Amino acid sequence: MGEAIVITSGKGGVGKTTTTANLGTGLAHNKHKICLVDADIGLRNLDVVLGLENRIVYDLVDVVEGRCRLRQALIKDKRYDSLFLLPAAQTKEKDAVSPEQMAELMGTLKSEFDFIIVDCPAGIEQGFKNAISGADRAVIVTTPEVSAVRDADRIIGLLEAAEVYDPQLIINRLRPDMVRRGDMMDIQDIIDILAIPLVGVVPDDESIIVSSNRGEPVVLDQRSRPGQAYRNIVRRLEGLEVPFMDLEQKTVMHRLRTLFGIGGKR
Amino acid sequence: MGRGEHWTAGQPFCGARAWNEVLERFLRRGWTMTKEACVIKGNRHGLMLSVSEEASFAEILGQLREKLSAHRDFFQGAVVRLHSSAAFLSEDRVDDLAAVVHEYGMTLDRTMTLEDQRPQKQQRQKVPEFNLDDTKLIRRTIRSGQSIHYSGNVVVMGDVNAGSEIVCSGDILILGSLRGVAHAGAEGNAKAVVFAFRLEPTQLRIAHYISRAPDEKGPKPTGPELAQVVDNLIQIRPYGRFVKR
Image 1: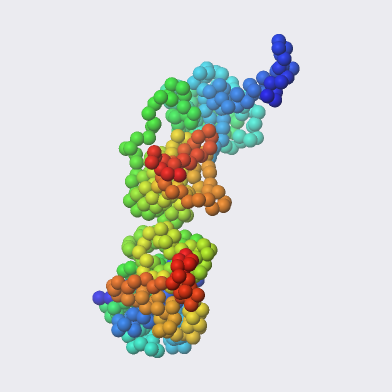
Image 2: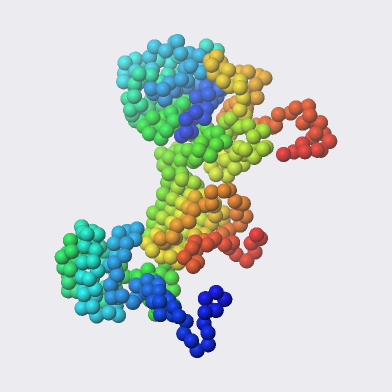
């Protein structure tokens, strides 16, 4: 019996889809059987980030409404045979699906996959309610911005009300240099407010945008720092203890300064 | 010295009469609740009609007519709530009041509120009306979008995050950080207090007093603090003897 994880944030544009794609790919790389579900009906883009856009024939709404069998709608990933995507409908509205239908779908998927990762739409309306129904646990994505943290807080409250307990936190797009200057909320500030366990911190990096546009998840890029961060999160989701990576960029000057003990620490 | 310099021995201050008038009027404004036979005032809940227990009932009716006719248009169609003790106003007297109020195009809400916002002298020694019996204990974090409304005190074992609110008629104790909106004494008890381990609310309200966080970021609180109304202002001070500031 598999486990359904919903990736949610409340606020839009914080990196839910990127996170879903990377965690799914990372878990599939580690030989798990994974199904990614794009619950963002009407604004789908998980397929684009995975580079599977041109293979979509049937979608989630077709499955729910019985126009096709589940097998027909699942798209196999280009790179991993154990990774599947259930795409969202682009031409339908969010209320084309009900939470009960989603829960039923999740039940079916759980019998076939190790992990089902649901990409939740932004907002707290119908789409959100659909995405969290049938979820066993939640991963909250936030960025170090007051508005994103505020929305994450709201989402945690709503998840509690919906009886999805013990959410975990991913802080996305952290810029250590800005934190050091005091221009960005630091990790501890965010954890203090949200008071949920941290499962990973992903540094802000240009490589994310490049890989999203190319349809190649950054988690596969061995040299990329966000890729490393995602690989660590994957292992933590698998239940392993992985130390948090040092986010400070180690320039030569920086290393020298630390060596001589001049202002190396922030 | 200022004004005092005008006083010369044996000679009354030239403007004394005028000054006394102003002073009297000022004083009366402050004490309308107890001095006048009947007072109509507006607050958050709407219009309130309070009657003095020291005046005769005829006096009250007379003054009520006087006041209503002076601002006939203003009161037209309004609902006014009676604010007096049940012991003083019998059923018949309430009927009389309602009739007068109705004459001027208003309706009387008969739910009587026993406690006056400004306690009478003999009541001042009484123990606070809120006791631990009507306290709600919440053992979780109150998050953005959530609100707690309770008639009584509220104790939160956890944080109260920005975007949430707690409204209650009694005291509010937060065993954690208060970052949202807290409204203690929401039914008019200005003696209510708000306590938090870290008091950094978006807004604090006690009875009808409101204060908000300063626009500039100040230093974060380092210890438990208590907010209460002192001299018509919400004042925050460190709580406990061993707090370093």
